Image: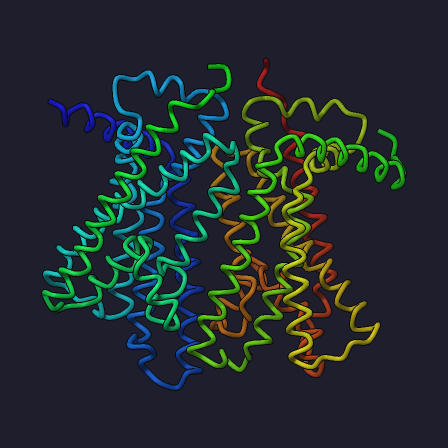
Length: 267
Length: 267
């Protein structure tokens, strides 16, 4: 019974995102253009390098990594910071707080509908195109299963970070600045702009100790490795699980503490 | 409506600007955070460049410093659209809510009045960063520093920025016709990220597309060739000021056409 009320939110979200078909079309077109830019950029980078393998990654590896990172971004990014920030500025957040459901959970589940829709409209097509374009460079095996598990954890980590940053808006009343900072940090340090394999040494080690690489780097590394060593796999998934718990707990606590001291416009 | 002189408009602009800055200053924290966010974005762009060029010394015959020059050029030429035309982002909200009607009743140029209402100061950080990047790479490449060069630079920077302004105007104006114009605007703005790459990396088809259909190559590549490779300047580079003006006028006409069709929400 408990799950049912959450799934209702999922369904509502799915119906809501079906309303914005034009939006989906534009997102798909935008991704196709981005895909071409990334393709040609890295093609010419690899051509200039003269070798096939750079930092342990071939051209198709890099392409798959970056394109799927973008696809993951479109699929996971829920602009929760904007949602929370706007609600705080307008004061409408009061209505959500009065709902008989934990706000953090409510928001997550109302986004879950668009997760499902985005998965089918953007992620899956991109995945198929990439698999075809690179002529089977994506290993299709048990790694797909691990990939799905990893993505689920990535979503949770991403949401927790978003929610944490959204909570900061309670204090600053600045949305744009906070959001752009978060986005820039996450995209750069998670390997979504340049694969982490290319990072120079001290930076690489530091980045691996941060939670951001669990969002994009971890699932993509798992996906690209057709026959992972059990130790490596355990290490990656374990790290993700660790960050899942830590970020969830922190964002939860921060929200609880902050809620006590806010003053809401028109509340 | 009788035509007002340029001086009249400049005076009005100054007055509106001061009011806008005053209201911005009352949200000081937001201003500071936004500025930091902007600096973050620029630093992240720079860092990903730096990481890339550690693994690859040159891309398609373009050295690190030449690409850096392109990057700086694109940053500077994107500043006007950031600073002066930021209100385009709110256009769809005004149109949707019906508040847009207030602009229609002023005895001055509608487009001018609407755009002048918001001045985005945080764009100035980007300007400084871009100028610094240009100066640094200018010295490293060993370009001459003559008054003629500087004049060329200024002329081509201004006209390059007209292209981006035009693209954004047209995308924003689409909200007069379609409901969900945010995606279109977002898509166009994402184009600007590709402006920093030399268009030669693309295959002929995409070179054509990025030159004539989505003219992002005019934001940095073609204009900066005049400075970077003075011996082999293609005709398109010399034409870019003309193209910039043309696009701007065209987008202005589209914007005004949309506004003239606007008949409010009836409330």
